[in-house]
Image 1: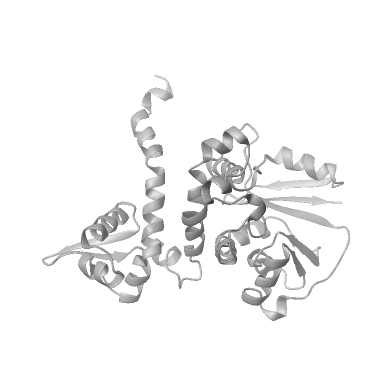
Image 2: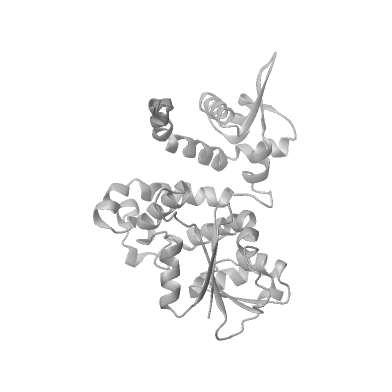
Length: 305
């Protein structure tokens, strides 16, 4: 019997078909404030109470809550008065705004920006171009910073990226011993989340963030503590690439393949294999190139001159 005979093809197909429904349910519950309300309540609430406090219909909220239970984002308890809902540990940790590891801003960026661009994925594949004009009615040339529609969207992206580094940052920074590099540059470092992880591991190092002028200005004002604002210049050394790596045989991982499609839709870029990155580094004069898979969302490539 071949292994393919054991696969439930219809089930796999339905799972893929419903993928965007799952995402949008989570996005909607976050945007409406379901998880924040349940965290503040310090107990379970009925669907009627949640709907009243969040200003939604009772029928719509009940369906949303039940779907969140199915996704393991909420727990439900049946009482004589009806169903009562509370957060799961996952939701308290990652979906509430007040949590240090909150992914709220990242999810809102996906919901309000990425989700709309992906509606035109077919066109992106045909044209090989980003889809901001179709999604938002604005040319990429007119976008703020060539990527954001507004400063508000840029700030949301910056908060979202910091949220990702609160989970994945230490894994990529610790993938190699960076202690020999006392001067570190973070190209496209955005709000400084990865830089702060680096400083926490290597307190003797200085990290300089390079990004768009407006991004740097906002990062200084809103994100980076004053003691971490020193800018220095240095030549030579090494470069640490923090990327989601594709397998050499193109079999995955799925997250990297999805991100590569997202790079096409939003920025006309792509994810690469370790060999492809190694060739780029070698062409730039780096000779000692090491690759480390972290087992998490992002991987690390270290090149030395």
